[in-house]
Amino acid sequence: MPDVDEAARTLADAGGDVVAHPRDVGVVARAAAVQDPDGALIGLVTSRIGYPIDRIALDRGDVAWNELVTADAATAAPMYASLVAGSVREERRGENLYHYLRNEGRDRAGVMTRPD
Image (cartoon, rainbow, N blue to C red; front, side, top):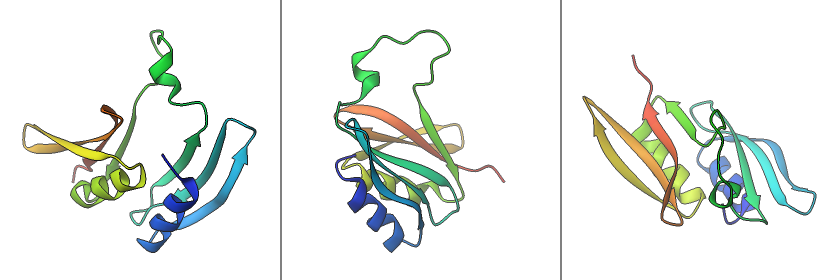
């Protein structure tokens, strides 16, 4: 994400809460913790060393995907994409619509509506 401070302000303006205000994490990142309007706790990070997942080979069992299950994915996905200066790609999965959050030409995370 380009700017953790701006992203935290944007999320707060959208009805969320800043749980841990932005701060430096050594020399490698700046981070904050927020709660979105639907109640999800999210960590925001601006990496100063790039996306590690883009530079390393993964081993079986490594975590390489973040996913948000929310009450309203159609609203949440564009909001989160705006925080990371990204875009949303949608894909129909049966009766549901899955939202991929994209940045730098790659799918980075997913958002889906919570089942009833």
